Structure formats: structure tokens, C-alpha cells
Image 1 (cartoon, rainbow, N blue to C red):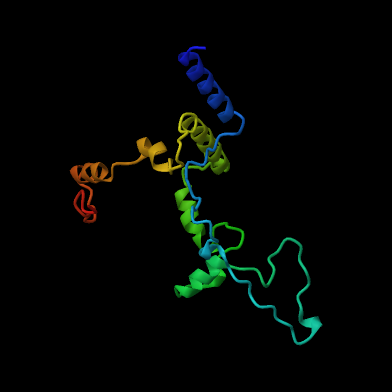
Image 2: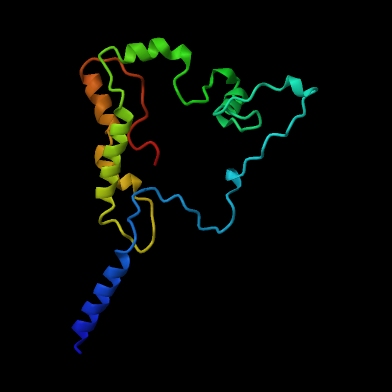
Length: 176
């Protein structure tokens, strides 16, 4: 058997070995190589409290939050001096932002835009992940979305040329 045949056969075997599993389309490489637990992922539970009387307990409401559940957003808002009661558990917009939402949607809005964008982004990530297999896993996110980035200084210059008052900005390359 010729050496070229052996090399070709090994290449085909290697290619067949890669095709058995589904592609990873996450683009972000968020795994840790340390082999130890992630210390910031451990969140202690709130202590259980015993009420004075069992009659003082509220009636159970299916689907609502448990009193001992963690509320990291509300805790962060309280730590920063805000009102944690304004944080909504459902993830929706706070009621005080109604005027802002009405103003932003005055020309119409698509109720299913989040689902549409999620589906389009999934297709984009699938296309980008076709030929991104690497021997060493690395973060592909910034390379995949690089063509969609705005050049902030070009936009700033365009606004200034149009006569729009703009805030000051650091010069290009200041972070180096």
C-alpha cells in the first residue's frame, strides 16, 4: 500500500470521527480549564424563617416565587442604593417605564422581534460554525461578529461633520 493511500485513509477516518456529533454553535468558549468549582457560581440560600404562627403564612400561589428564593437583581439594586421593589421578577419592563416604551415604539413595533432575531442569530451561528473547528477550543464570538461592528470613531466623525453636538470622546487608540 502506498504512503499516499495511508495518508488519505487516515484523513477520511479522522473526518468521519468528527461528523458523529452535533456542531457547537455557541461561539463563546466559557469553559474553565481549572478542574475546580467556580467560586462565583455558588450562591448560598437564604436562611429559613419560622413565622410566629402558621396562620401568618401567605396562601400558596402556584408559579410564584418562593420567599427563600434568591433575587440577585433586586439584591444588586439594593446594594447600589436603589429600590429593589421596582425590579420585576418576570423580566418585563417596570411600570414606570411606560412613557419611555410608548415613545420608543411610536412608529410601530413587532411583538415577535425577539424570537425573530434569536432565530436569525441561530442561523448565523450555524453558518459561522461550519468551518471553525479548531484543535484547541477558543472564543470565536468576536471573529464571527466582527463585520457587524460599528466603527465608533467613523460614526462620531460623521455626526460632527453633520453639525451634531457630540460629547467628547477619547482619541483613537487610547486603550493601548
